[in-house]
Length: 313
Image 1 (spheres, rainbow, N blue to C red):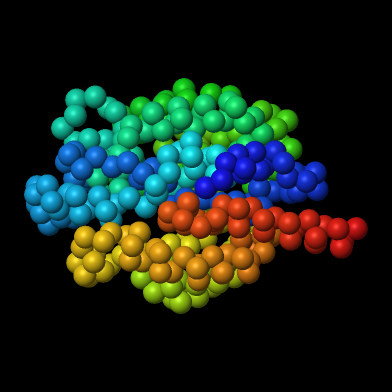
Image 2 (image 1 turned 90 degrees about the vertical axis):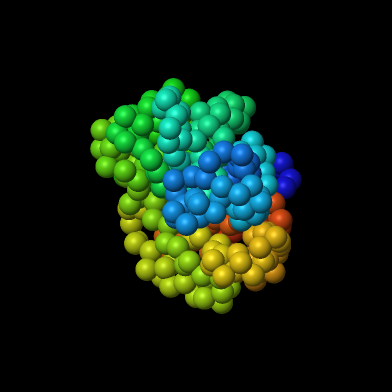
């Protein structure tokens, strides 16, 4: 993925800087952290009991890795390529004495702290870029784990964190004026105790849960049509989800070689036909964001807002 998109938000034309971020087209990645999973670690608590039993066999863990990894790029590489929304699932490691929290997708990934520090160092170097971190699945975590994770988030980003505000107020100019660069969405009731945690319902991400690309595109159209006119961001998850029988049929090939390669052109064509704006697309996520020029395609949709703006004046 070209790193020419590292400063795309800072480079947007002035007319777009005063639009709500919820009206811009923003590229995101699905299971953003899964570029590295530890096949030697125990299987994560997000998996069914039968899978946990099977996964005692190292070959099964190797196969799980093929189906757990949905991104090949590190956070830094994704950020440099223009990705600004990150879909995050986290877990404690049952049996570990410390409260350390890890990214997870079937298998354990890197420590959340390490990922946050990587993101923060990018933001330090690119002060006009804004990221959305969507903590939407928590496993094996009690309140003390949550407080630990939230304190990690605060320590990593400090004054870069944007407190909850009316969604329509949050523009690039607003963020730049306040020197904010990070919006955290936290799908757990504890968000109420921290002003810098946005409720999960401000970042709806309807999930098609299908292996069929035609059903996926129909679902994306329908949910976009139902997008609430005001008050939230919106994620279009342009992803296909493997069924158990898909995994069984293509055991060794893995996700990238079966579902993704075959269907990316159609998904990308759908993206190219979209328009951002009040009732249009906002955040679009995909698997293996480096396989096509996904981020650049999404970012380019913002030019349509410019044309609209010019014709209105």
